[in-house]
Amino acid sequence: AQSVTQLGSHVSVSEGALVLLRCNYSSSVPPYLFWYVQYPNQGLQLLLKYTSAATLVKGINGFEAEFKKSETSFHLTKPSAHMSDAAEYFCAVSRGSTGFQKLVFGTGTRLLVSP
Amino acid sequence: NAGVTQTPKFRVLKTGQSMTLLCAQDMNHEYMYWYRQDPGMGLRLIHYSVGEGTTAKGEVPDGYNVSRLKKQNFLLGLESAAPSQTSVYFCASSYFHGRVMTEAFFGQGTRLTVV
Image (cartoon, rainbow over all chains, first blue to last red; front, side, top):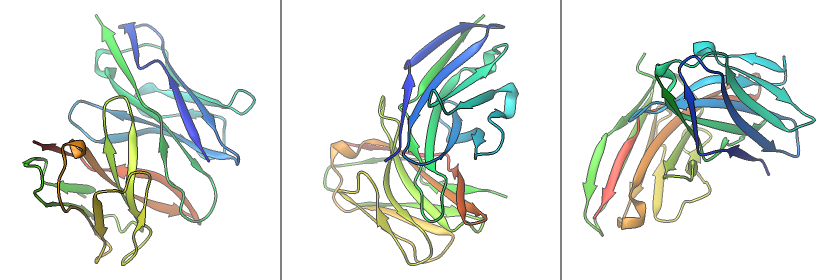
């Protein structure tokens, strides 16, 4: 069964600083991996996804993530934080195979950005 | 396109009351899901559907029922609400790329309080 661990329920950065949100996965088969963002009182919006093509994935709003099989990681980064990046971020995994595959979510990391 | 629309957005129920949450998607997606989101627990799958007329249990199905009579609609019912069902409920839908399920698209959520 797949699972996801997000290290740190809260991460605080200053505006302009590097953003690093950590995600480690467990999967018995090659996974599909996703990062979602949730702004207050809204639904989840896809930031980026890894589906077994390029290991460095670029997403919206300047975010990117690198799939590292040897480390079973899919950390999310952004070179320079903006105030508008303050939100909750969820990593999710599914099995990249045919048929129904549910998304398994991590517990989320809240990103706080200070001026 | 509206994407995934949930109604209502907010609801307060008394213990023992019943209600139905409606989810509608206009993207012709095969798969639909109901999740609940609770602080520190991420999103947990309640029920899902892989097509019109089909439903299946997720991780936390107890106390809920679902129906998918039309492809675009997925209903979540609470027959006898309990305080433990106080949560934010999200509906999502997804599509296939080739024969593999890709990312999910989420509604804006329904905030339910059971008193």
